[in-house]
Length: 351
Image (cartoon, rainbow, N blue to C red; front, side):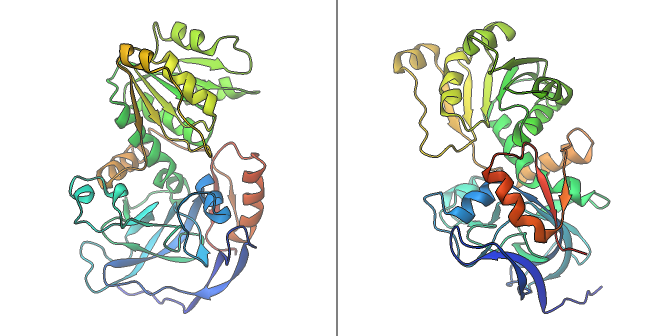
């Protein structure tokens, strides 16, 4: 089976950090020997894409750069060394595009910590184009028949929060708190937690947030705009504090509070990346409570497959809005203004 691949394609690309986001024609990439070529049908948009464009993080981006790391599409080509893929397979582009596979981190299934990690939409041209390359080993396998628009956010947001819940090491029937429960990441975290048999208390604030969070699966909810004592309210709702906390909120204060309300011997997981933030907690309290504070980055191949399986079984879903690729600069504006509360989706090419 062969597919005719064009020489050029539409993409959104920027030449400098913070420079113009240009919707233009560029060359279709040629896959390396170890890569597959994916015809991207849909791509999620993530705040990480905004940080990559602005150059906010202490990691240099590839320039010029095509952003995007939540791409879902169809395999249309591959390098000569690729095994286990065929043209017509459904595939996903993840944040982790490739790794060395030989360092101590890769050998222990911590590929995201590989010093040579190649990152989609950061060091590797990503999914805001019609055709994208991905390392054949790290590319996500998407079951045939999947709704590619719906699965796209799972490839980053879903995998990220699923990995964080595993990192919290919470058992079925125990409490987990999702800080930022009504946002894009948070609403997925609530659904994964419920599907994993956990009891969920959500923290968020604003009109309609409590109703939405409870629709997603929260058993209890604390509105930070109304609560006079968030720590006390979370402890009361969970009969002593949650066994685990997933911080997808980007509030430094909220992160520090989570160390206060987590149950003794519990685990606080850091996911959100507020610029310049620090976790502040009295050492005495942390020691006496035997609290663990852990960072969770992105999932490995097994985590990715498991997260996608939850989606395939209908246990998690994400509200989306589909727009044309040419509208991506406007989506970036909305993200800058904090006007997007749920994951937006960009269709790979305008028709």
